[in-house]
Length: 273
Ligand SMILES: Nc1nc(=O)c2c([nH]1)NC[C@@H]1CN(c3ccc(C(=O)N[C@@H](CCC(=O)O)C(=O)O)cc3)CN21
Ligand SMILES: CC(C)C(=O)C(=O)O
Ligand SMILES: [Mg+2]
Image (tube, rainbow, N blue to C red; front, side):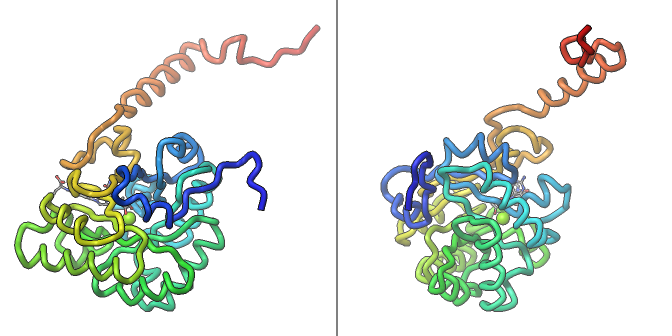
């Protein structure tokens, strides 16, 4: 197979092998232009179901569909060249059975060309993760705060302060790693727990709101650009403030249109005499 003129995409196996080397850099991406900008700097790009909240204004991720994930997965694949691209399985597309999970994961892999899928869950999903990985679907696990369970978990809050809560998340992490996941996203957990999990499993942990003790970090890109700017929980850092930049551009455009200073002669097609 020739790869002339192309760099090869990072594989889930290579992400797994990064544990103990250097921190894994990852961000969410939902569209072609943003994927193109983030790709050179990231080991992994996640097409997260957070797109329901960030792009579509949904209150939670529960309403996100498989069709939405596939459409955005295709967009990201057109923009990303070197990063490993993983697509979130949305709520309702994998919880019913391991067969349902395989069928929908296969659709995502076939229709987007991405490198693997992510699914939320611990002990209740271990059999599914083993079923998928043994049949050719690379799986990124996700434990701790699981946004798709917001309707049964009592909302978004950081976890792992009580012994019971910490024990449960520790067991979840262990079984998902043993089931064959190539990496594990740990969301919204206190630092000592994230550190213990990272030390106790042989696949890398990628944290969001889970301390610097993880093997890598992920953020929702719109959050760290300061674009989804009403949402600023403790774990988010704005690496840029794009919201005021965009507002000012829209304001300047409106002024110029009303003053008839835009479009100018340089933007106008003339008939040459
Ligand atoms: N834009 C965006 N960024 C995200 O990180 C994100 C999404 N959307 N959608 C899917 C989930 C939902 N997530 C959330 C949502 C809310 C909180 C939150 O309100 N956290 C507060 C309270 C924590 C606590 O009480 O312990 C915080 O200050 O961190 C955290 C994570 C993370 N994910
Ligand atoms: C990065 C995490 C929160 C995720 O699963 C998402 O963006 O959907
Ligand atoms: Mg998600």
